[in-house]
Length: 164
Image (tube, rainbow, N blue to C red; front, side):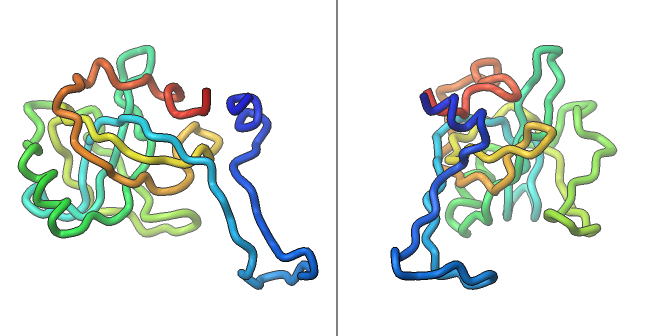
């Protein structure tokens, strides 16, 4: 049932008081976004290898290409240090060499991304909203490094982050 709702474009619910009329631009309504926990591969970071600020996350597609799926929220200093302990510069060619990453929706500003060896799996919380390319529309919330999960076990691009 959840997969059907998300496939139909239902990403969550909005709540308002019964006696409250619609007022454009007023943010008094409450939102409930449908969220799931899933895994992704860290392909790059903003900041530095020793002090990452955000994670640029990917998943492999059926052809074996690492596809960009989304960016994380800003890491706390402690979380950044914990992630940094697992990061390494790329060993040879990186699948994202030459790519640019947008700083956000509707902006021309690009991120200063530092490519990393795509071998670290991160458990993240994401909402079910996707853009037309299948990427997460909103930043992922990092939960923990999954040292017990190999990159080959991460769901493929477009899979594994919808409701059952």
